[in-house]
Amino acid sequence: MSVALEFPASAQPADKVPLSFGLVLYPGFQALDVFGPLDALNVLSFLYPIKLYVLAETLDPVSTKSPQGLEHPGSAFSQSIVPTHTFDTAPKVDVLIVPGGVGNRPPNDVGSAIAYIRRVYPEAQYLFTVCTGSGMAAQAGVLDGKKATTNKAAFKRISGYRPQVEWVGKARWVVDGNAWTAAGVSAGIDAIFDFIKVVYGEDVASLIANFMEYERHLDPSWDPYAELHGVQ
Amino acid sequence: MSVALEFPASAQPADKVPLSFGLVLYPGFQALDVFGPLDALNVLSFLYPIKLYVLAETLDPVSTKSPQGLEHPGSAFSQSIVPTHTFDTAPKVDVLIVPGGVGNRPPNDVGSAIAYIRRVYPEAQYLFTVCTGSGMAAQAGVLDGKKATTNKAAFKRISGYRPQVEWVGKARWVVDGNAWTAAGVSAGIDAIFDFIKVVYGEDVASLIANFMEYERHLDPSWDPYAELHGVQ
Image (cartoon, rainbow over all chains, first blue to last red; front, side, top):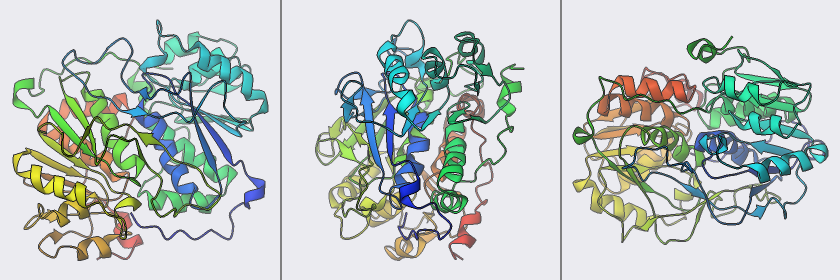
């Protein structure tokens, strides 16, 4: 890649936009749920003075490996990310990012992450979830009364967590008020570009997408995976 | 996400496929260059007994932050990955993965990574590069006489490193013999699915893509970014 990013004239000025991001991590998170959106935000950090806090229960590196060892028994294939803060020491964040992953499925305990989401959501400007991350936000109660979506293969389980949420079956992503919820895994990339478009400006979103050579899905109702996974 | 992956009847058996992967990391790597392909391979690890070695010059966590601080001066926005081995202690790998990123641009020194690529390529079964990672493989001399592509915004610089490579301007990815080279950043996702299709089987590739809710680009000549960045 090359870095020759010019700040678009039409972009929102830095004093009008959210500048701090908190990423909620837990063992068994899905890598692309995190790094699709973060790659776009990493590029955004060339244009805006933004900060990322990588948050977990402790400061130990957090692995993509599923806590129950759901991988093939002969596999040893994971990546570990270093947190910058714990849920207890996290600075205030403007945008709360919650990824999905097998690690948030029972019997795994992601209670500390859910408690953190519940605690800080009222102070945050935006919530951004990917995949089954919306199930954690729902369990925190912060999606009550809102439209939201999730991973389509896990739709039945996730939507059962919290009937107070208006679950949308067929959607690449859903925006309701300050909450963006993306469908499964790669949908987080399309959703983050929608977030960037709405919050920082379309020229910023298209600049970053072209930098990443990424063809965005622009229609939030595009979702062949709902039907594929039998979601109404 | 949900995990209900059934091994496809048509898939290559585990004793016929590469099982060990080495990821070459260096400071200032591009996150999605790494985690697009790795997310698909993480899912592959549910089906096959595969191993990943995360390799760097030392065992210190490796950050996405650009070594020259090319980000906005007010930004503090990066992620750090924990290596499992150094280039000197790496076990033998079947598939060598080389991501791009601003960290491989001069005046940064990625000589130890390039030396590692040069040393182990003859023993590896496959080479897989994303974005400007092909520039590092080219500098290692292992793409000589092969067709290859790279990031389109950086095409002129990268293709100038090594005229012995047959650089292809308009391509989402290129396969020549045992070498897959992807275009910029997100192209690595399409290229890894092509790699999985060819090596493990199309049913494996489509199973994983559906799991990730990812719509693949299937045509390796699809590349609007070549024209966008003025590449012939």
